[in-house]
Length: 109
Image 1 (tube, rainbow, N blue to C red):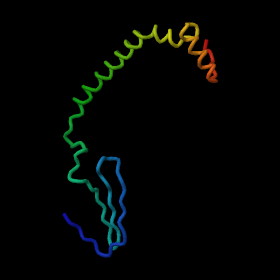
Image 2 (cartoon, rainbow, N blue to C red; image 1 turned 120 degrees about the vertical axis):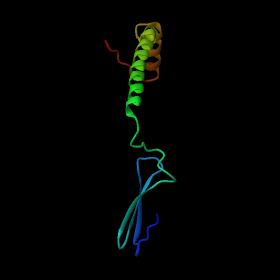
Image 3 (cartoon, rainbow, N blue to C red; image 1 turned 90 degrees about the vertical axis):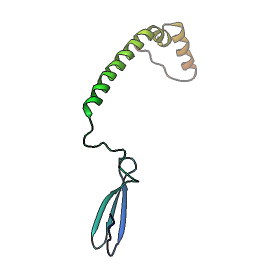
């Protein structure tokens, strides 16, 4: 669909937050505003999009990831304590190295 506007004084364009879409305003004797896309709006969801299956997949997946993350941290917690605790030999060496490098190290009780 072609639009003709007599006595065009200017054209203003602005980007949108949607990928590959811009807004165009033509002004002069009249105003014309449109949204411009390269060929079609391929990155917009249509009105019939099914949100329920998406939520039914994402919500249990998020719960599984949180549970796996907790299990992973619990498994590696002794090693993390060994590496980060100032009372352990590795932690003492790490703290001493940071002190020699000029980094202020504060112990937290």
